[in-house]
Structure formats: structure tokens, C-alpha cells
Image 1 (tube, rainbow, N blue to C red):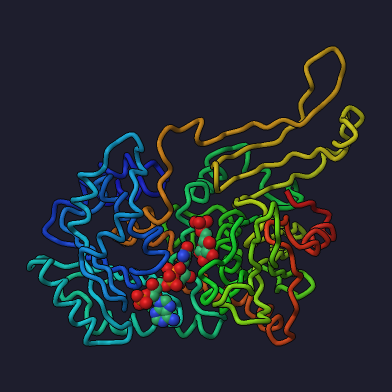
Image 2: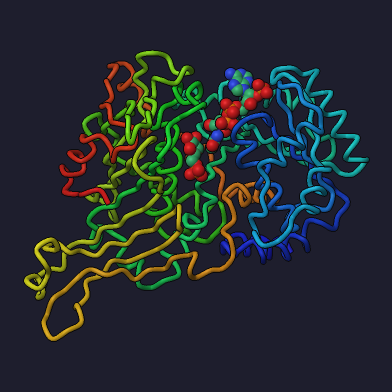
Length: 504
Ligand code: NDP
Ligand code: BG6
């Protein structure tokens, strides 16, 4: 049964099928899983973790005996926590269905304990409450640290000393960013696994399927046929309300060093020996260790400023009261990265991540080389003189994979245009795509480590970015200011142009 569950998870099959496998495997024994959301009063807990737990419950993917505890300093009763949680629960799986009954059952399993993150006594009180609910069963415990990184260590110490399971396993899930640089990350590393929710996104899961189970892609997946790769993360809102956290980290640590770099390694790795977590991670580490050190001239940073459009004032980054005046923290960054190995030497991997831009999307765009001696060069319109193929993997929103090809426009003449072979998920699959957090939480319960970051991966990822981050901060490099809602700072276009690339 374990293998079955693993197969289902590894193949990225919709939750529907995980339902059967999980039910078969984890519901029948006499153990219990207690999930404590540390920082339960916060943004991530409300927005993602509780809804993901509900979706898993709805799909029967949680064990029969489970309890969820919220833990934070804010004072709240169980009823108040349930009220807060219930505001963000939706019938995501099937919007036509009435989930009220299931929601009520789920909320009855949710409790709250208020405490400090550095108090052994408060965690011991939590332990006592957990035991009451575990009712003498073998207790397995998960602590999901949904708190700012500077209090991770205190919380982990207290949870492990005062509230770890006496007779089952205890797992701690730590959010990214894991540390601020190589040194602080190393200090945090021992025994902790970092979560990167981008690895749980459907299209990121599908990357390996696309590459390794379709004959047509893998032979083209190298410097021989690929001219450049773009990894784009763009959000159309600012850091509103999260300035206190964000200002300490900036966009490079918030998005590039983890989410985009993880996608890059999955994109570029060699074929792993198997789909086992260790085999995949071995290949990812090799990519990271083959990467050329990042130089300041390969990077552009920006920060959004206030903009008035249609009478509406959109605040600049430093207008947020939680951001120190004069902050130089980048809210945008673009970088040109290179993997100096046999497969990828010379191919620019252009990354771009930004807040308060004109759209919200995450994409991988693969530009192929020109067709040598193209017989049809003259048959393209004037704007299509370098009509190369492009493969786009749109991670979100409107998940899709499409391939731009050149095509004859029907008719008696010989005119070519560009068309898309388009796999739009919403048109092809009727089922809702599970949220990344559902997959990651299920993996944490099952002890499946493939979507979590191994410490040598983390070291290599920090080794790539730490010197650059230090230089940016020591030299107090001033970011290029861009208006809220714009496409990106102009410097990002120059950077791409230097590598003969136009952002998609
Ligand atoms: P919040 O700022 O909302 O913090 C969560 C909770 O932690 C707060 O409700 C508060 O609870 C407590 N807290 C906040 N600041 C402090 C502090 N300085 N000292 C002690 N306790 C504090 O964070 P998020 O929920 O946005 O993020 C939590 C973690 O998840 C972070 O590591 C972040 O990087 C990561 N993350 C967040 C995402 C998001 O979309 N929000 C997405 C992906 C990752 P109380 O006062 O009740 O104790
Ligand atoms: C988080 C970052 O890791 O990812 C946030 O801390 C960002 O700044 C978020 O907004 C984006 O996640 P998603 O799943 O909404 O794309």
C-alpha cells in the first residue's frame, strides 16, 4: 500500500486517486496524527494551510484519527479559531457541492492554544492538550512553522523539548526562506526540512513527466537546440501588510533563491536513476553545483514606487508603515544564470521575479534555436523574421503547456504565421487542481521527502546567491524604481538584450 500511495503521488495523479490509496494506507491503524500550525493567527495559516488541510480532509486523505491545533501568541478560544478558519474555507474541490456538513466536522477537529514561541512551559501545556486528544493512541506529530524565520529556532527547540511525540514520529515543516545566507542557513539546517510550496504545484510536478515520458522533448533538451530559458515570477500586488517580513529578506531571498531556483534545477537536471526522492535530489544538487557564480553585472534590482492610475493611488513599497524609510530592499530582480556543464554551457537562464508588476503569472519559457538554412525565411510577415519555436509551461494562473510553431496560413499563397499547440488544463481536465500545500502536507504526513529540500541542496542554493546578496548590501546598491503596475524596470530589458533575449 505504501508503494501504491507513493506511485500515485509521484505520478502527480489528481487527488481523486490519492483518496483511495491514502484511505487504504493510513486510516486503518490505531495511530493518530496531530498537526500543530504554529503561527495560526497569521496570513499563510489562514490563506493556505487551513484550507489545504480541509481539502485533504474533504478528499479523505487525512487519517481517521487526527487533530489540528492552532498555536500563536494571540489570545483566542477554540470557537474563535474555528470562526477565523471557517471564513477562508471553500468547497474548492467541487464548487457545486455543499460542503457545510464536512466543514463542520472538520472544524470540530480544530483547537487552539495560545503561547509564546520561546516558552517551554507553553509548549508543555500544548503537549498536555495534544495527549488528551490522542487518547492513548500511537501519536504522530507535525509542527508546521508558519511564523517569521527569525523565531524558527526558538519554536523548534520548544516543540521538540516539550511537545514531541513520546511513542511515534515528530516532524517539523519549516517555511522558506531558510536563513538569510549560507551561514545562517547552516545554523538552522540540522534535522529540519524546508518546504518549498512551488515544488507542490501541479505544473512543476509535471515538468519531469513532460521531459522524461515524452520522446519528443528530451532529445531537444540541451544547448544544441535550446537558445535560452526564462523563469518568470510576477505578482500584480505589492508586499501590503508583509513589509516587516519582506524588508528583512527582499525578492531574491523570497522567490529566486528558492522557488525559481528549484524550478530551474528540475528543468535542467539529468535523468535521475529513479523517481526516488534521493535520486531526484542527487541530480538537482549536481545542477546547482555546476552553476557559474553570480556576478553583480548579471543582476538588476528594482523597487516599486507609488503610481496613480485612473484616480487610484497605488502605494509605493516604502509607503508601507512597516517598511523603514529609505529602504533599499529589492522588490524586483532579474538575473542571468549559467550552468557550466556539458548539457547547458552557454545557454542563458534568465530569471525575473517581482512584486507590484502589471500581471500575475509564473512561467517557464523555453526558446529554441533558429532553423538553420530555413527555406521559409521569406514567407514570414515583417514582425516574424526570427520566428523560433517556443515552449511555455505556465505554472499559474490558467495552468497550460503550449508550443509555438510556424504554420502555413491556409490559402493559395505561402504565408506563414505562428500558432500554438495548446494544452490548457481547464479545457482538458474537469477536476480542480489541488493546491500545492495539499500535496506538501500529505507528503509530510506520509514521510515522503521528494518535495522537501535536502540540506546539501540548500547549501548549494545559498552558495550561489550569498556572495551576490552580500555585495548588494555592502555596496548599498540602489534599486531601479519602477511604477506600481508596470512591466518591470527598464534595466531588466537591457540585461536580457545583452543575452540576445526578449522577455516573454
Ligand atoms: P505573518 O507575518 O502573518 O506571521 C504569522 C504569525 O506569526 C503572526 O500571526 C504572529 O502571530 C506571529 N508573528 C509575526 N511576527 C512576529 C514576530 N516578529 N515575533 C513573534 N511572532 C510574530 O507571516 P505569514 O503567515 O505571512 O508567513 C509565515 C511564514 O510563511 C514566513 O516564513 C513566510 O516566509 C512563509 N510564507 C508565507 C506566504 C504567504 O503567502 N503569506 C507564502 C509562502 C511562505 P501572533 O502575534 O499571534 O503570535
Ligand atoms: C511565498 C512568498 O513564498 O510565495 C510570497 O513569500 C509570494 O511573497 C508567494 O507572494 C507566492 O505564492 P503563490 O503560490 O501564491 O504563487
